[in-house]
Length: 236
Image 1 (cartoon, helix red, strand yellow):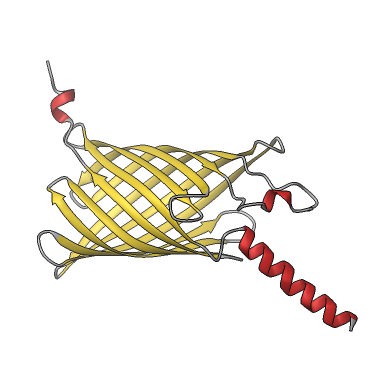
Image 2 (cartoon, one colour):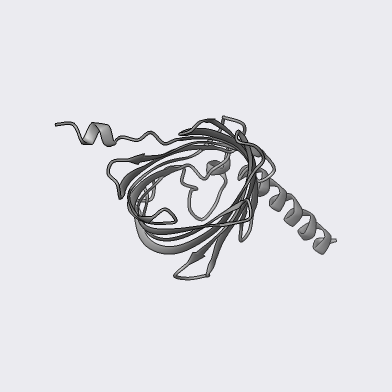
């Protein structure tokens, strides 16, 4: 009888924790990306993301990222940049659980990254290989605790043009920790896209975000706006 109670209690606790971290909810990411040309070989990357545990509610994360791109040629780009991330990893009343330490809903991160992108075309399929290194400086503001972590990422993306206006976009990206356990997460993505103008497109898709212990399902809406700013920088 005692063993049965332990098993039942374990199932209940596991189920409750799954609900408190929002694993059973369909969340959403709302994103903006920009590549703004400032010279023949140089451009600026701009990015903003709002991530939610549910559909545009129950805040999870704010991500702001920028970088300086050097275009080696049409198919190779090197980038160095910076990102600021504000995270609330709790879901509903998770912070009120009686744990050894209180759950923090106030985590911030300053991140430096280096990136290299290679592009190629096979028939009509457009492939992009993105290699990224990240130096992450994370602060748990509630516990006044700081840490430094390092991570490598690789993303293989494939774009399938349907017409001049519509396209499909797919990618898989793996995150590898350079300390402790190697596997961090994997993201699998599929979307339909629309070319609004030559420098403006939108995508709506689905992301499966797999961590070591949890999986999240996220709907994504993304806007890509890439105006050429060389006229502003070349004014005399």
